[in-house]
Image (cartoon, rainbow, N blue to C red; front, top):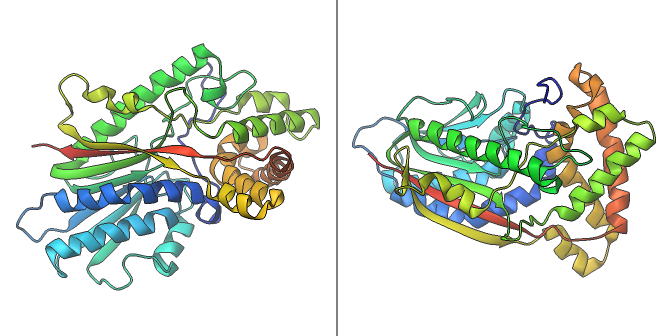
Length: 361
């Protein structure tokens, strides 16, 4: 594949706080991981000095979904360390992330974690977590929720589709290989940054044994919408052909594969791994009120806030820096997707995988 065909990206969410407003599903998945996160906070080892305790949030996006997990971590750390030791929290995401929305959350959100603690110091790093982002041996606690599902680059185009799980077997195999390489790269980089005795908790959407994800209906409906937009002249067929999402869920066995030889990878060991069912809260509301339009709106806004920028990056105008072209594309995609989802209501019940890793000496 020619490298200029697809923008290599592991997922930039829609800006102006859209992800904060509409990404309720990832927030629900993160909530299911909180008991393991609380346990990890209790198990992390500290030195006897007064250097700051470092918490890293790998893949923070616009910050709203990170507030409660970081709040939980700080509460647990304060219980163990007392009120005076400094805690540094680093939110890590790509340079193109909407950091203005993140700063607003850190300053104004009711759940902001530093509001009543003068010894908590938030910081932001604009760099991909597929690179080094913090000094070696500096991180006590790492958290990553729904971010490592995004690949570092797109390995192949997908004829007639935009997501790997709906592509033909050879294409899925290429994405599987890329996902395996990226998972090992992510773990290796984090292992370098973590201190001995630290903990890393990674939350990811998962796949069932039969390969289903729970998102089949919305992805299929969006795929049909893109075909409609080509037929109606809203996008060119060449632009549509370049549209590929770098989101590629893994199975439990894929997450454990780097540890298969002797239970250890880059001084990391698996302390726990848990798979949970995540009900679609929008569908739960629909079962009560039978409002198809409300259901379709919630699901379409979720899709737009999470996936639309990656699809739009294939448009010629957007690749040239035209933000208005992205807005027009997003509005058209959302409106058409709402209509289709209202006509084909279905839940997005999904799986959540949480893996807890410990850094050995």
